[in-house]
Image (cartoon, rainbow, N blue to C red; front, side):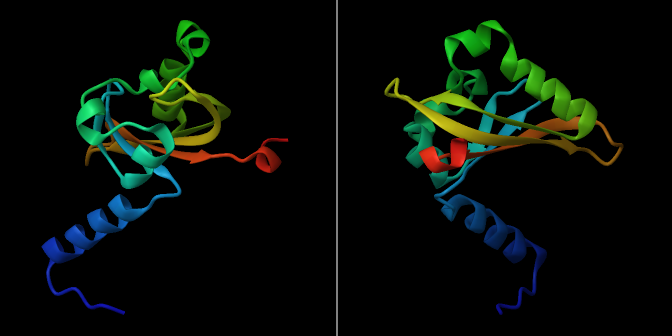
Length: 131
């Protein structure tokens, strides 16, 4: 096991660990749901390059019918209230193709307990995982 002498080195290793994960899309969202950061898994699963999606609202990954029903906003609200929100449903890639995804949104808090943003974890589901 690698020993880390400095907090900065540990933080860098943590960031690199998250960035290198490819089987899960990991996104950092601000309080409004805008994309602040993400890992390589987002590009693989969702098809966007980082510069194409930064600053966009995560609603872009949801089908128009889910956006009309305010599903993304309801999930953020649930995460604010309960600390997290889970959902399995169809999601949209950049190329317009649809995939099944399992998501977990977790609220991030400041030192006073106020929600300041969210992490969103998405796993693409294969046919045998949906049923």
